[in-house]
Length: 293
Image (cartoon, rainbow, N blue to C red; front, top):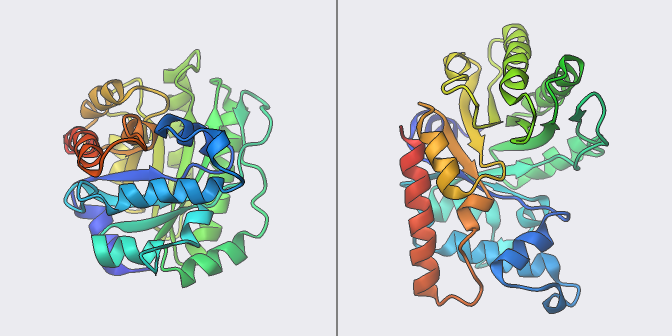
């Protein structure tokens, strides 16, 4: 674990840019950017890497406001200006590289979607280590305030998280509560209780992060932010528009953004570099402001 990166993640102001759309969500991300499927010719991941490269190289994508970027496995293996993406982020931009490691969601059961088994995780982590990755991210989803389901989600997140800790990384555990969950506040309350139980049992030196939906009850996660194991608690935009997400985030002190859709929603392939940089700067500035409350 890079101690300079750990210190930055713990103490610096800013937010995390989520650039980790995978195979399932990539066509949607490209379409929003203005690249239709007819333009791929089987080169979907090349097109999306071009989009991410344009974002990362933009002067508006700056370490003063952006702490880290979450990458998809395919992006980790690609280069920007001849340099592996993670090295470009840290060496050229001062931004911490994080890797999405989950393989998607299982079918819904007990009101939740667990992660599918992450086959080959140890081998992926060994590669991530060679690529100088700081931490990981993995997502599961809670759709109902079902205690058995929520407990299964948190058990799985911590179990895989500790496998990742033992490999020398800081995992981001992401138990997303669907913003359309009919009793979202109750689901979040149950989830927090399960998180605290697991945190109490962690080895003293284990360091983790959480990525959560912005809670219905403001400052719900304030207590676990103080836990010695917790490097940072970050928030996903979860389908909210950027304005909505920023407004809700700003009410939660110490909670910082890890936005994907909300960061890139106004970016278009047709924009000139000056237009692109200006639009990205506006998004980055507004998300940063909401993250430093």
